[in-house]
Length: 239
Image (cartoon, rainbow, N blue to C red):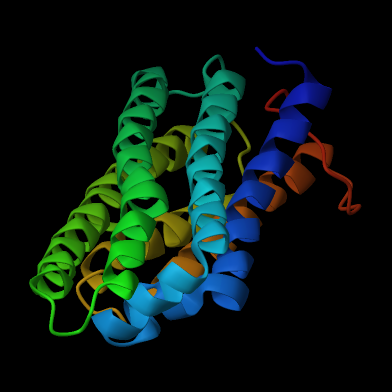
């Protein structure tokens, strides 16, 4: 089991790693995302902001690792107290598979799309290369979305639900935390079909990540038991 101070820090880190890229995307690279407009406008934005674009997706890759970290910490903390240890054992495996898929999708966004955008911006409008790059961009963007926003997101949901159910069987575990966790992961699942509607995806992702971060912090606060706004490890040794 991780030490209390280390686990406490890891939960806070996991929440921050997911909120930071969310803010960065909305403030810096939103015009290049699926909700940013036409493919032509997106490509030209990415070509003009390649470093910022790649930086943003590297942040999302770190967010994926943070999500794995949070599930791993909660699984390690709860495994000796939950009445459903078989569920909590599967959660880290499922979330790790989801993260691996997510990292591939984010890697496409960080490396492949900027290269295509640069080629697109440098080609003449009536050049055959121009239209070819556009087609490849659409395919690469669709693949990245399928991997990250759909496949990985669904696996994250499954892992999250396993954790919520397992924690709910811990003696004296607060019901409101079970409800908050359940809602957070249901909203995460809702982001999967939202990937098909670019204008809805940012809202769904933002809602899911805010609820996920709130859940982690609420777990930490419950671990103290005195209601003070500190960042403790959620422990399960009450009677």
